[in-house]
Image (cartoon, protein in one colour):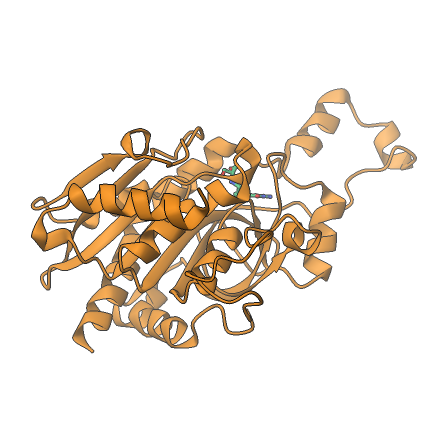
Length: 312
Ligand SMILES: Nc1nc2ncn(CCNC(CO)CO)c2c(=O)[nH]1
C-alpha cells in the first residue's frame, strides 16, 4: 500500500488511543537531538505517550538522544492540544525518505495544520555561537538536488500537487511571531541569540569535512544538519504551515587546517599537532549537551508562540 494508505491506517490507530480532549491537536512539535525536554511543557493530565515501536508503520529511531515517542497532551493555561514527536528517523540510519517523512504525513491525517520542527545543527555562520537558536527562513536540499527526495516517484494527490512550490516554505508570519515572542520573554536581554538563517541538509552520518563546510558557507548556508528538510518538504506538499529552529550545538570548522608543507609545523610536537586537530572536532555528546542546556529557552519560546497563536 502507498504512503497515503499506510499513513491513514496509522492515523486511525493513533486516534483510537486518544481521549476526546486530545483528539484534535492543531500543532505538532518535532523534537530534535537532545530537545526531548520539550515534553516537560506538557501538563500532567490528560497525556498519552505512544512508543514508536508500538505504532504500525512507524520507523524505529536508533539514535542516542532520540527517544522515539509520539506524545499527546495540553500545553499551558489555555490547554492547547499538541502532538510531540520526540525523536525522529534520519536518512543516515538507513531509513528511506518515505519513512523519514512518514510521521509528517500521519500528522496531516490527524488534522495538524502547523508543525514546529527543531533540530541540532552545526554553525557555519561565523557570527553564531554554540547555544544560539536559528529560526530557519530557507534551506539547501543538497540530497534532493541530486534526486534523493521524499516526493520522488508517483505523486500522492491526496496530500498535494505534483510540483509543489517551496519559495514560501518557512512561514513568514510564524517567523515574525517568533521574534516577537523572543522579545516578549526578554530572551533578547541575555547571551543566547536568535538569528534567521539557511539550513543545509546533508545526508550524514559523518560530519562534514573542512572543505565541505567552506563550500556550504559559500553556497549561502548558515547552519548544517542531517534532518528536517525532508519533513519540511512533505509538510509543505500537504499544506501544513511550518516553523523550524536549529539549535547551534557546535561551530563547524571552516579553516583549511595545517598543511604538511608548513615550515612552522615541522617543529611542532605530536601532542601539539593532535591538539590542533582536536579543536572544533564535532561529536555527538556535545550536540546532546548543548541541546539539554538550551531546552529551557527553546521550551519557553515554543510555549509563548503557541500561546500567542492561541490568542488570535
Ligand atoms: N558540523 C556539524 N555539526 C552538527 N551538529 C549537529 N548536527 C546535526 C547532526 N546531528 C546528528 C549527529 O549529532 C544526530 O542526528 C551537525 C552536523 O550535521 N554537522
